[in-house]
Amino acid sequence: MKLLSVNVGRPRPVPYTSQPDGVTGIDKQPAGGPVRVAAPGPKGVGASGLAGDAVCDTRHHGGDDQAVYAYAREDLDAWEPELGRPLANGCFGENLTTDGLDVSGALIGERWRIGPQVVLEVTAGRIPCATFQGHMGERGWVKRFTRKAATGAYLRVIEPGEIRAGDPVEILYRPDHGVTAAMQFRAVTTERELLPRLLAAGEALHSETLAQARKYVAGQQA
Image (cartoon, rainbow, N blue to C red; front, side, top):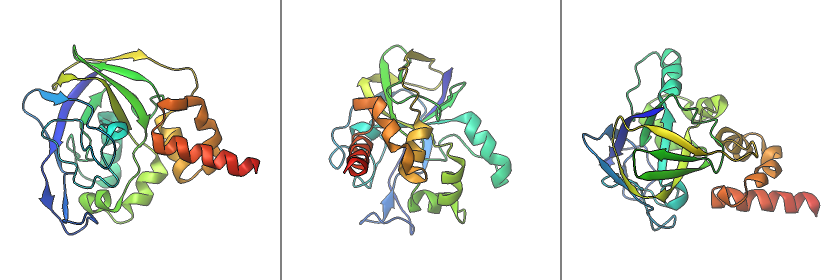
């Protein structure tokens, strides 16, 4: 298991984002050298966990629970024949393109060591948005991505440091609750009946998902 690339984006104006200034950093490109990774701070204040990476719409993106976004090269490869075109590392807006790692099947709270310094923890799957659809230039992209549920994973930073392309990825810890990033994604999108099962992941869940699951359970019990 290793990193194929570490991808960062610069802000650029586009016609398809709801960000007030009309800019997005979703177009990620592989970095040529090491990239510093650290917790960015709370959502709405903090942006990306990667130095030099732009998160322009901090209303919905960035922050400690979404500090880093990872996507598997294997899932990009699976999309290529469906889309009829090659997909470069970073083209889904992911910061980390991995090889040999089941990213969507990673467990909430699973911890990865990347290179000699950095430790990250899985928090959630990625919810597609209109900016992602505009970036991809595919009609119905939000629905197609949701249906496939090869969502990738958001991660929080447990131990900061530098990472670079080629670094090994080691799974340091896997919890035994069975709640994956893909399950979390399905629970908050198309299968809300799964929300109670997410509570087994506890505080490792993205804080917004944890609150949503607790609210759902409370409503069921009322």
